[in-house]
Amino acid sequence: MTEQSTAQKRGIKITVTLLVLFILLVLAGFLNKMLTPRQMSNIEMQLNGLIVFDQPRRFADIALIDQSNQVFDRARLQGKWSLVFFGFTHCPDICPTTLAELNGWYGSLDPEWQARTQVILVTVDPARDTPEILNQYVPYFNPDFIGVTGEFLQIKRFANQLNVAFNKVMQGDSYTMDHSAHIALINPMGDYHGFFKPPFDPQKMTATYKSVVTHF
Image (cartoon, rainbow, N blue to C red; front, side, top):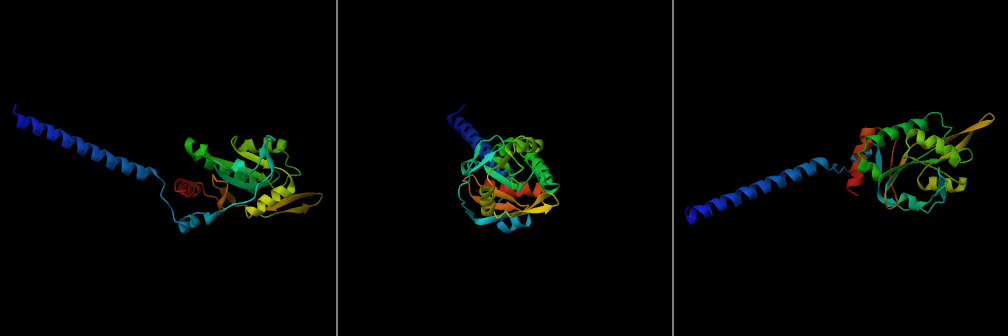
């Protein structure tokens, strides 16, 4: 075999190798684009039920407790994306429905997405919703969900900062609670990032949520 033919074969091998590498890079880029959630505009997200603020809103620290009697402060809202819903265990319809929908939505996420996400119920009825009651109620929907209670004024302060309104409504010798039904979205910095509007569509929530998280 001549030196020229050997050089030609070597050149062909190099060319083929480079072509294969180029094709693999193109395929990798294509797959990455296909698997990466598309970045939605704020208008698109709004049409799909998620309002995202132009600037996330910093709020004051909180001093509450979870269903395990552990301190629940602003630090507990850092490091993960948090979906915060305000409700109460005696709620006849909206709260259990919303928690069931959140359970279905959370369950549809891949484990890696679940690991970066936490769902939190903050009671608007701390007089009845003790940690013990929340510890029975919240895990019924999902054992990963967190229930939060505490002093009324602390809860009211937290709710006001997340644009949640609630008030007691007397019903004979008992009472119920009227409250906002949206779900606050808090980013891993612990800042109020936006909120999901009811009614909640799990598919739309997933699309908007993944867009926000991926491009944060």
